[in-house]
Image 1 (cartoon, rainbow, N blue to C red):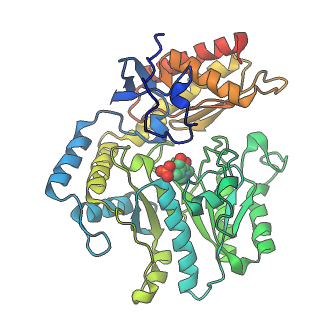
Image 2: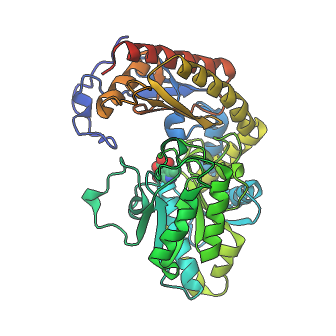
Image 3: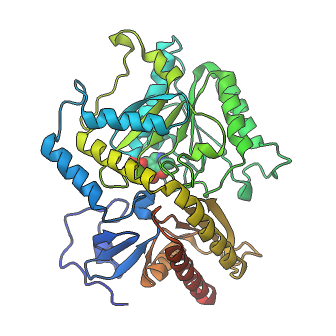
Length: 449
Ligand SMILES: Cc1ncc(COP(=O)(O)O)c(C=O)c1O
């Protein structure tokens, strides 16, 4: 493959999560220029499959002029109006559309500009909910080791993923209680499902007791946690979590930032588990990435605590939250997801992709497990599945991502190789993804890092 020429000088652009000299490496970051469907092109007009939808974002696929037109039309009519004082048509319409799609009882929508902000707002709503009800000492948030919820201070505090680095930013927000999560492939309690009777969910009651229930505001968790290994929990896990929260008056926040909008083959990740959370955080696929936007979806029984007078109003104030252009784009994007039945398509094409990946795994000793649902997949990569010996993790990431990139596929890969292409992916494209992955894994078996 022709490698792209280096930029002539270090750019002013400081890429997220990258050292300052990233552009001076032998394999500098690509400069992406254009997209269409499931494909991206770099400046050298080399084509890649976007096998992670950017970052689990581009549900409707790249190059949708309908979304570009929605942005242009709204910006020409009204780009911005004071978002604290006034409503706009696109914000009103998008909120209505979200409530219609949400599980029963979810009745209010509070906008944000990203997933992190949505999480931040959900944590604040949970705390003020208790405050307004005269329980102002409930400030603690329970989250799960291995989880990821974002980068703003509150979200960073509740993160439990090893890669969500906290030490340089500490002390963070007090009251973040991290407890073991759910992953039957690597049970944190070394138990076995179903005989464990979802001990990991029941154990959360013990943590709430130990912290004193009158100090605990909420539990936050992804229905299907990507950061914690892309593991799909048994339905009892979420039912038990719901019961535990109810027993202690603790709010349950489902972080749907990745799971939401059809990624898992249903509209919401939580739809697989038959419960309704108190709050849902959404972003990413809400606009398919055509505009930055997030939101908190709020159950009516939570919203009721904010009724009655300005002193009970939710205290927030994000200048761009509910931005008319972002809302118009997201509304048009939801139209595409509904019209083209993309959640259903994710279920059927995803089942095909999953079957192909399992078949590949059977023949490759470097695959320890294949986990996922819908178009949300991850392969667990080891040097040898019988011994469980891992590859050195940093070297594996660079090796595998570049082996896939050389074959025309972009994704995040390391001890977990993630595959979450746009929801418009068809069967042939899913096959192309599986073939490339198989070929790269064959090379890994012959001699990886
Ligand atoms: C589950 C989850 N919550 C929250 C976030 C934060 O979203 P954002 O990156 O839009 O701030 C992410 C980002 O990947 C996420 O995966």
